[in-house]
Image (tube, rainbow, N blue to C red):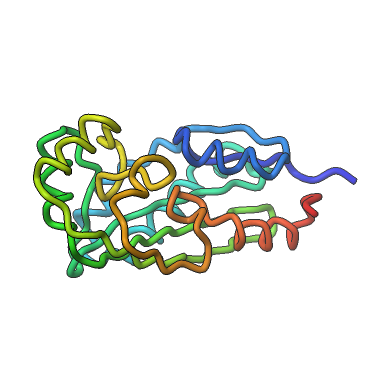
Length: 194
């Protein structure tokens, strides 16, 4: 049985690696969405990630109307404020100094545009970072260079050592794509998953 082509509306290597775990053929395509527009227009983190996930999927679906297109967006939040990707080591150190010893949330939104409509869901993970010294934070940032990661950590590798506790329905959401809910949705759309 054939199914529509599957496209990941992302060039993120983290999301690509996660989707590869499902062993379903797919391609990746850059959505070309200006994320700053949504961030300027919306102030609520949940609204921002859901809007961006939908816009990314819709942008690629417009170019491939017969495909199943997965869009995703993620934000780390602390006290309601979004922690963007740091971009520099100094910003990563500053973010980790704010997070150390505290709990924060990671919101991961997914939108799946398909020929018959739209499926959307959000995973919320609460992460509690252990107390950290500035030298420990500096060592971590130098070792892992988490400059393209919301929250300034790569929990799938050395970043796990920064945490005391994780509360999540799906640990893959932390890396950018909640596979449990995604598998459910893709099975319902007819993709051959176990």
